[in-house]
Image 1 (tube, rainbow, N blue to C red):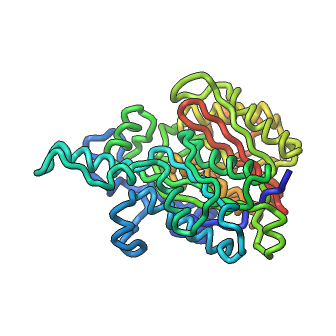
Image 2 (image 1 turned 60 degrees about the horizontal axis):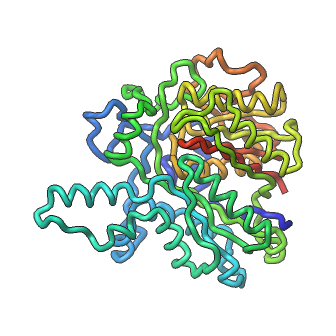
Length: 412
């Protein structure tokens, strides 16, 4: 089996346009939540989101790229470019068939879909569709265009597992490299779901917070008054590389991926199993693959979205595996970034890696009254980041449909 390491990082998200700016705001406990500005939310129950502010695609893409890309693909290309530059993988003399792209998204081109349907109904010349409608809409177009931009001719596709998608993409890339099927991958996820139909659909599910009068306090995982997640948007990219290849070319190595696992709840279309049975099994199997004991994990970036059922279900799963492990500290960074849906796990993987690199555990903000139902012995980092040695960090991600995923990173 080959060892797999992370050699490049990139992101655009509600907190920042790169990893370092994002990380600084994260460990300072800054919230990106505001009232929605992308469209009029007057008719919606929920009116709060974490938007990428002041992003003008015209500054970064030429006219031909703009015509054929949805915002989720633009986010993907923006983040991937940072990760490729960071890793210097393009200068490595690598066979183009040995490097691939596995890129995730939960919804794909939602804004494109809505625009085309609206134009079909109300446009002057109907029925008429944009010839780029389908390419812009397709969920796999981000992975395809990343490969075209850099000439990567290896394995290329898009997995979809709802809000676990980012971890699924990372895990697939990890496994292909581990089994010798590739030397490197650009992987991660992007989402641009703050659109009327997407936003309205989640609001109709009563899955999102209605704390509209206090946007920055709306995402409050583990707080007794939490009432739903806050939608986010953006992208996060990682370059995964076979260890010997990275070492031989003198690459900067952020961390090693040592374990990854997925399970299914087989329980409900949107609600996790209340006892976290599937989630705990994903954690256990990831630890087993990593050949780690629970007490060796220093930090766990939780999926915790700020829903009443989901937060407790995950903590029940954690408690089942870790018992009262004193060394483990946990936090939910969604309290600051919002929930990036198909991109959530990718950016949270970066946060887990940064925790290892900087020996800082980011906080969960907005916790004013901790839910008394939380199992005893759970060390949640609340409202202020924690300085501590982090050698092993874990990241959980779960999705509608009962998808559970865990990825483990280790200092190298």
